[in-house]
Image (tube, rainbow, N blue to C red; front, side, top):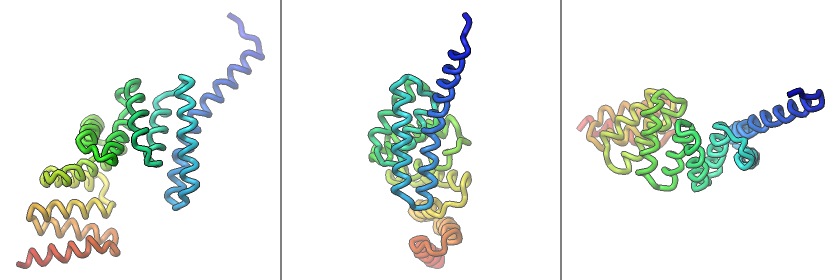
Length: 220
């Protein structure tokens, strides 16, 4: 079958537009993240909404790929539309069951919906499948949070310890690790965790107060 030059040009335009749309959904999401980091929240929200619009159009046209579902779930997560994250995430995982970017996002959405059992299931699926994945440290932090809420402090200690090992520069994570160690009565290790939190953020008053409390408990 021969294609005329005009047909070839139209085909190339169509392919280029399709590729551009795929880039645009992710591009808008990451642009939103950049605006959010600068505290330009209205602009961030506009980018996130545009990412949702473009990705949902791709899905409606049956031209979606893995990135389309990743972009829409990420953007909806940033917009705190957690029920929609679950809806689109389930659709994405039905097509791409090994798309672990969606798995981790689903875990976060369930966490913020206070469905901790489902959140734990998705987070453990993520960490078991891609233990060195880009979001592994975050997933372990959420696992620690869930176990802390359930008062499984030793489990929480393990999860938080893994999170700070993978990403040691987050003051809140060290503080949470200190809390569960303190709950276990391990005041010296709690003090070490609080000290790391304070060293990262000297103005972290809760961590400073917890460090002082732990030091007093050690001296008793």
